[in-house]
Image 1 (cartoon, helix red, strand yellow):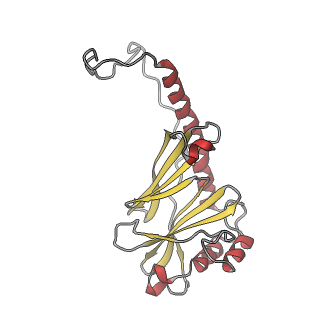
Image 2 (cartoon, one colour):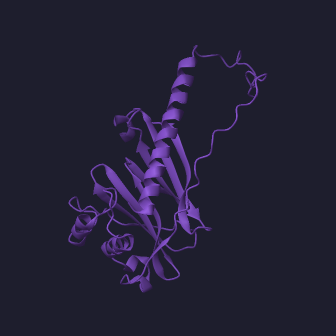
Image 3 (cartoon, rainbow, N blue to C red):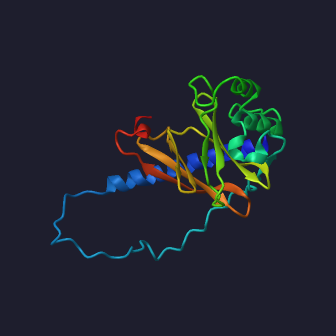
Length: 236
């Protein structure tokens, strides 16, 4: 397994654990509540939180997880058209160059040789093509568009990648693996909404945004939210 893909899987594992804990907490809070509507006249004044069992010592913090190295940008040289801008490059050429840069991936979450070969012979965005239609959006704030690509590398799993032109070279600045029901762009944020398989009615909302220090898109937040009834995530 390549180092980048390993980090993606570790990230998914940590998110699953956090999601389970947060969902349990939300469920417990819901069970504890009760009572009917209270009129505006009799509503009690708002008060700050009150700490319970303050006579007991504070529990020590848990042992920290090993610090994972930040994902580094991957420069993909020799892609035709790069000198004319990110829109001038063929997305299939980018996927192929990324595959060569990673060496043959050992894990099915990454596009392998068969998937890359199929992308070469199909039109991005068509139902029979693993490569979804490319999206162009300024995610770094420099006024230049980045290329957002998504590959259905295996059933139920989406490989999500973002490429930027850094110093004139097509560079991968995000490599993430999800099973989302929605991928969105809001301003310069890339948002992935993913159902929690073990708890219906809840989703994990992950936000990636640009980090100038690492020159990559990094995970800013990952929060568990209740999904409104009737939304795609609620049906999972």
